Image (cartoon, rainbow, N blue to C red; front, top):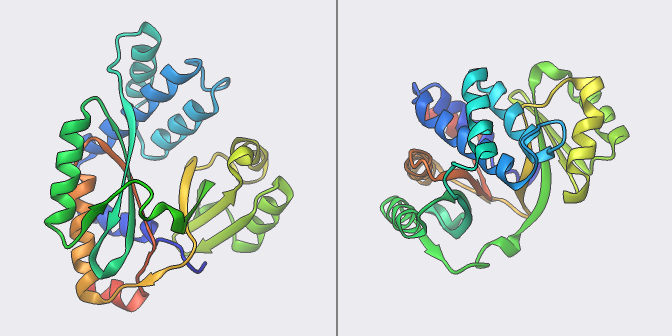
Length: 247
């Protein structure tokens, strides 16, 4: 799909780099706790919590860890995390939206600014790049869920707006208000999704060459290593040839 961030490709590349699982679980736990605090601590009654739990299961997070994160929120002894968003520009003039959950805004802002500035980018004011993205729901499935035609037909029947399929998997896009209903309708046909969340879909993409792509990967690695940063969205497009050369 034109304008797709290729974030999934980058995450697959990172997955081959012996990524620290403890850091990944920390981010997943934080999202579960926040979701449980914002609604009922029952995944069946709390769509955001259900999505967070499904995402954790997809990453093989132990059930005990998942339940501990929910229990912390239910007991009221969990940290008070705040959702914050940063916008800016990366190598090659790409637009970036960085989402974080933090208990210390000053620490997170400083760490994000350093990571971006040291890797060919700079932060902008709120709204400086988000106008170039659409806020939508995103449901992710592995390639094993079915072929492109099967997923497309299931998504169409469920009320989705668009579908993007590749060898890495399937991405089903929905209106914000329809996210959880569409996700629910897909389960009988495709099974549980790897993830269901609000996302930033770029309206147009920016082609990134090999040199800028290498720096961009370093930038995203630096952000991903920060426990506070949950997701990085961008309007970068990286060709398969460039990905292969970068290994």
